[in-house]
Each structure stands twice: as C-alpha cells, then as structure tokens.
Image 1 (spheres, helix red, strand yellow):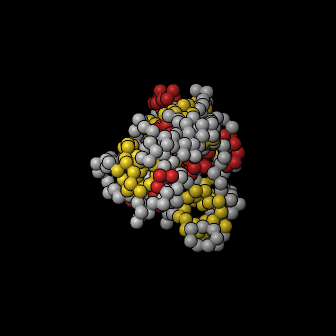
Image 2 (cartoon, rainbow, N blue to C red):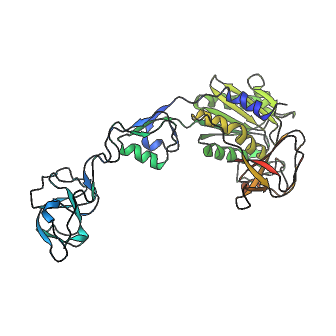
Length: 407
C-alpha cells in the first residue's frame, strides 16, 4: 500500500498539458489562455459620445443657462453605428446618440436633458436651445483612453470568463490560443448495472456512476464522452476502450479494480495499467496507466462514494494538468462539529457538510447519517466538500482540526 502523495506523483509524472489550440472567441469560455494577449484595436476605437444629446463646440455656448439659453442650428443626425460623419460647422450642433462618433470640430456633448428637446424618438429639429454652459471634453469618450494597440489585455494562464472574453473582443480578437477542454471518456463496469430510470431487477442497480463521473468531469473543466456501462466481460471492455481511444484525451472507469473474482478492468488491462492500493478510505484500490502512448486512464473503484473521493483526489489534479494548470487545489483547515470514527492506517476522506458561521474555521460534519460507507450514494448529494483526517488518527472529536478539500 502506497501513500496518497506517492500515487499522485505517479499519476502527475505521466500527464502533460494538451497542446494549445486556436479557437473562436465564443468557444473559449472557461478555458485557460495559452499566450499573453495584446490589443490590436484601440478601446474605444474612435472618439464617441457617452450620452444621448448634442455635439457642439463649448465655445459656442459660453454663458448659457436656463434663463439664457443659446440656440444653435442642428446640422446633422448621428445615430450609433453611423459611418458617415460630417464636419461640424462653427456655431452648429449635431444630434448624437450614445456610442456615435464625435464629429470633427465638436469638443463636447450636451445631454438632451439640458436642452429644449424631448427625450426619445423625435424628428430632427432645425435648431436646439442649449440650457447649460458646456465644458470641453464633457461626456466624450476619447479614442484609446482605455487601451491602445499593443497594450496588454490578458496574461497567459487567465481563465476566460465572460468579462475576459468581452475584453478580448473589444481589443480586436476573434480567436484565442487556449488550452483545450480535454475529452474524457466515462465508462462504468458491472453486470449489475441498468440504465437510469429503468426498474432494476433482483441483484441489479441503476448506473449512477456514469452520471456522477460525467458531472464531475464537466465541473473539472473537461468534456465527458459517455461510453456507457460495460458488463463484466474483458473482451467487450477492451473493444469499447480500443474503439474510443482515438477520440479521447483521458479515460475514467469505475468498478472492477479490487480483488474479486470478476474484476473486469484488472482482467482486461493487467498488462497495460498499474494496479495498486492507496492508503486512503474510501478509494483504496486504484489503477492508472497511459494507453496509446498519450491517453491517461484512471481505473477507479466501483462504489459511488469511492468514485467521488478518488476523482477529487487523483483525477482532478490530472485534468487540471491537461488544462495547462500546474497548481494543486489547496488543503484548507476546518473544525469538526461532531465526533466520528476513522479507519486505522489510512487517510480518511469524508464527504462533509460545511458551516461557515461557526468561528474562525469552517465547521464540518459527515454528510451521511450512516457515516463514511462507500456505498452511501443516495446521501451523496448533500456533501459540500471532503473532510480529510490523517492516517494516524483513529477517531475525531468535536473541536478537533481537520483538513478540508473543497470541490
């Protein structure tokens, strides 16, 4: 039996980031930028209005006020998106909408509210009464005041959310070089499995592991590829996996890795994967290897809680590596809210509820009334994190400090 850290080192030593790909901006959400990004456009790209109103010269309305308005002829109508922008003659005003280009000659914007014109859709007036002495530059967005071409926009390694993608688009980019989302095969094994929603017969259970793994893959940033449930037939399992490898960046299986007489994953891949036991509970039996020279394969135990724990402890760090991330998720600290027992000689990963209001550290308690049994899938939905207890601890007492691994 090896330690968790030893097994993680074995896994991560054989996983490499996927080669960056250039993808359309709209396909990059949630991915990690693979290069520094600089602007190719100025932001804003031209001088434009920050208000609906009238563009004019501030010098033409010196001394204007409510009692002493200045009346100017209206010489142009400039909606947002206009590409034809005439020069503004001295003493004139141009009706302008928010975002429309500032006409040459104008140096200020007077909001429509400070004129005699009504707000909303109206006919273009012949003249406008200005009720305020405008200052040069008022309500004008200057070209490049946010970013100039060549300025940095986003750093390599940035996770691309909506705001980051909007910045890239504004700065002139329609494609981005990113670490692609890994395509992760999800495969459950066992003669006892039936499709979710099917009424199971005697000795049968719904295939919850495929559903669980697909969701976990998505949450970790991957794209799940559902390969279905395979019976305890090594030849059939080999056929399914061999046929899928070309389209996968990783593969996760559940079941068939322990010491039973029909452990199908062990039987099918005993010469290609390394099977071992890890000093953890749940999730003691594990298998790992690389198929086709490039596809990391994680052979997890079959019990659902073991699947959840094994995925977060071993698979998530590897998927992060495929996504171009090298840092591990930090192990936080928490305080036990209740007593519970621990397995002798193995690090415990206990699905837990987290209470953030209990003091300087979060309070944790088991999420399942039945304890940490690896078969307690129905109560798994309540879990918010894993409480982590060292292998040398055989019992936790309320008030003890424990580790906390968040999703």
